[in-house]
Length: 186
Ligand code: B4P
Image (tube, rainbow, N blue to C red; front, side, top):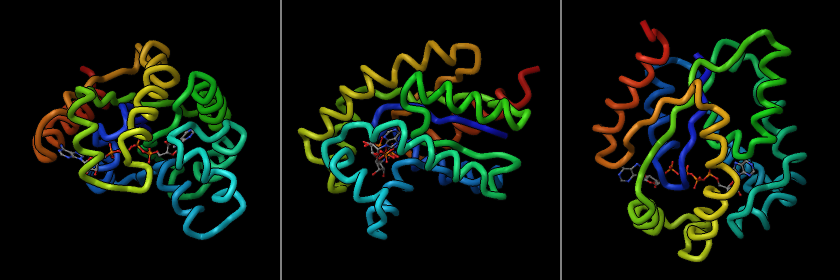
């Protein structure tokens, strides 16, 4: 089971990935979490990524791709993963396709979390992470529209859209249905 989770900031990808990871027994790989762990540990990558995270801009591909390549090579990701926050550009999608092709594997499906913008702004302002100020959230939404939303067309054949407006439990059920359909389309 190899899934990519796509959606605007605050769509609930991280929240649902935690539930799904438990259900499917595959690791949840979040590039945002990986960058924040590097920040907390004070690594050179964390120092290099900080200004992009603070501004809500994408971290440059050369830093992001290497980090993902390394994480996907770890043994726990060999038989499946939930990739949350990567790819975020059409170019990153090409890198991921090459990585998987080199392993003779591919994606099972791409789960799109669809939710109105006003809902995500309220959720993120309520969370209060350092990059959850209104200006930075607006920039992250703009970055999503400009750089990440085009991936929905790239992945048209693999895309399963989940209505991500509702309670965490309701959305978890919709995600479960989507995964069941994707894994066994017949
Ligand atoms: P991320 O950590 O991926 O941040 P995000 O897009 O804002 O998603 P997040 O995980 O926060 O939202 P979620 O929907 O889970 O990225 C942060 C930064 O890292 C980026 O801005 C960028 O700088 C960098 N980065 C990451 N990946 C990159 C890449 N591939 N290339 C370059 N740069 C990259 O949840 C949000 C909140 O909503 C939570 O508080 C949750 O409790 C709440 N919530 C969830 N579901 C809810 C529900 N149903 N009802 C109410 N609240 C809910």
